[in-house]
Image (cartoon, rainbow, N blue to C red; front, side):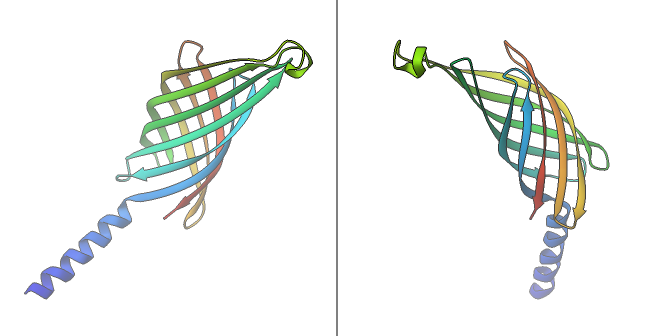
Length: 162
């Protein structure tokens, strides 16, 4: 009887683990507020066929006219799969930004000045994941980030399921 319960428990847990999905990915995206392309990584976990959670980080940098902007955005979003692999997302973002004014002559004449700030915001968006082979998918996502200076973040990437 103990062996039967063990085998039944093992079979049910294996079935339950297949219904859930853990994955990781890489992405590149465009951030409208700083007019730059960023890159980053993703971690996803799908609780079932309708609900999931995703954590991702994106780093973007740009330089224009002696001013260098660096952004690090860390997102935690809940996902609701509307139809198949089309999902709506909502969550939060922590944004750390650094603005460096290089000054005249790249900082040699007037010196440099640096300002660092961070903000918390709300993400609202949608995305789609298309399966290429069993454990590899491509995805596209567009979200609006509600901050003092809100912006749109569009990204695409490669997702690997485990």
